[in-house]
Amino acid sequence: MSITIRPVTGYAEYTACEALQRVVWPDSVVPLNMLYTAQNNGGVVLGAFDEATPGTPLVGFVFGFMGRDGNNPIKHCSHMAAVLPNYRDTRIGERLKLAQRDAVVAQGIEVMTWTFDPLLSRNARLNIRKLGGITRTYKDNVYGPDPVPDDQLPSDRFVVEWWLNAPRVLTRLSHPEQAPSVAELLEDSILLNPDPMLPSLPIQGKRLVLRIPSQIDALRESDFARAKAWRGQLRMAAKDAFDLGYHIADFASDEGYGYYLLVHEPV
Image 1 (cartoon, rainbow, N blue to C red):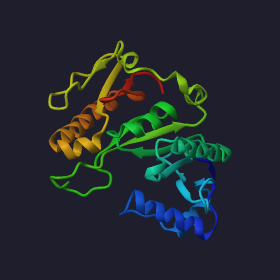
Image 2: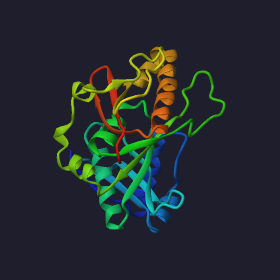
Image 3: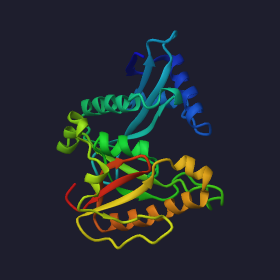
């Protein structure tokens, strides 16, 4: 496999971005005219192309644009990052985010934000552990519907803040092998939610840990009530911790669970 990351150009490649979105998100497609307009007005649209396959197909892409939060300086809002299913777990998503970072840093922008489902271990590992993002904002049911049907989970999201030139980020990017084990993450920490069917523990201390299932999609199919309990418990515990000044600073996982580390210290 030989993957090249570069800006998307031309009608055929923008159309390929549309087609890839239909595979990953069948009900939500950003059309090529919006991708083109954003890319030519300060936005970023990067593709991952498989050079080893005839026709050099697009197998992944990222898309983002400039934005701002209230009175804060300009930021980059990363809206989409997708990789075809048969190319996942090959670091393409990570490479796309790093290339996006390079493009945004070249614009003089210091922070990038995006959202992800807090119950997805794969995304947490990339966003928090590998890239060095933090989160201190929880958003309920971002994409609806409202009310949520009984057979669906609310579309809750963490907001990732990626401070592109922060020392902690540069350290993570230059020393990816220094990831903590679950035991190291739990050491001197309070595990707030050992069981989703029971109340969380009181929030206290400098280091907290929130547990999530490692395979929420499989759990949703096999035991929906338990998956829903994870969603509700994590929502309440995370929002309470964020309100008290904690933020998520690290992540580790084993075969059964993922673990978010929350700290009460300056970002």
